[in-house]
Image 1 (cartoon, one colour):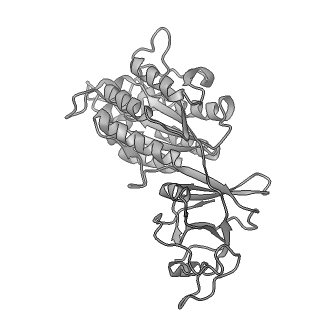
Image 2 (image 1 turned 90 degrees about the vertical axis):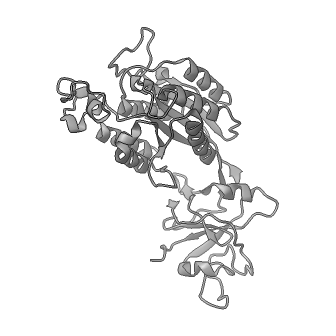
Image 3 (image 1 turned 120 degrees about the vertical axis):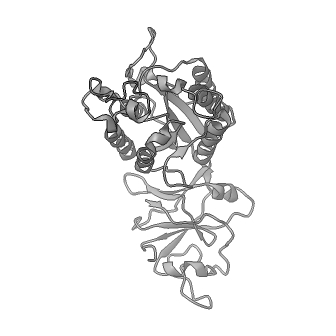
Length: 371
């Protein structure tokens, strides 16, 4: 169960540790009862049982499937930009991939799918997962993706829901990661469409919302497949989450027309931007897009894990501390039999735990957060 409590600083340490790592409350430390001696800031958790994580903490791999829009609308040049969105995105993403990502492996799914005869205007094609995805995951996957990105050309519409369904099939049936966790990073430049079953007025018609409707009337009147398909996308993001696959959402220039929709996707995906609680939005240049992607990959690569010596009898209502600080990015995960538990951490704490004098890590369990 995830522990989402503010704070990841490592200033505190477990000192006077009579009960550090024990399954009983610490003695009073000149004030309120606390679960860990020398940590008065944890007095609100005095009813928690405590177990030390003896480690060692090891890096945890992230298998990242990039689900990247390649629709024709990305050929537009945003206001104030010098390059079209496609050129900026491909160069920025290529620069982010062209770094040493020791704990991250990549695959890529472009939507719509390119075909040997060309997809063409209005195309919503998605090929089967084993054909559509540039994979498999591996040490040289990033270089293959860069080559594919820089040689591709955008076309067609934005079948985002179908792409996410294909991504789930790939990650659960075709190229299931043998270690660590799978993630989807969705990169999109505007509203999803391509649902033939939908119908809408101009207020939900993607070309109208993006200012691409030359007639000024409802451009979806005779093309319902261009209606905003946000509900189907949300359902697919939730289906990925149900399969244990989190989704980070990145909005390219053009996605700002659908900011609330993209923020909803990000929250459903379980990996919102920690600064805003919604989607990651990029600037217009390759450098800005590359910086956003680098930050996301860096977070996914800075994860570590350790086993508990024995499973917790009550793994719900858990919190994790490093020193005296509660960690926001921490998760306790048990296997299907309940015979073992692992603690998964993320961020600067993993680097701190690799140093010669790491802060002690404890799991607080069987208690709720203070009001």
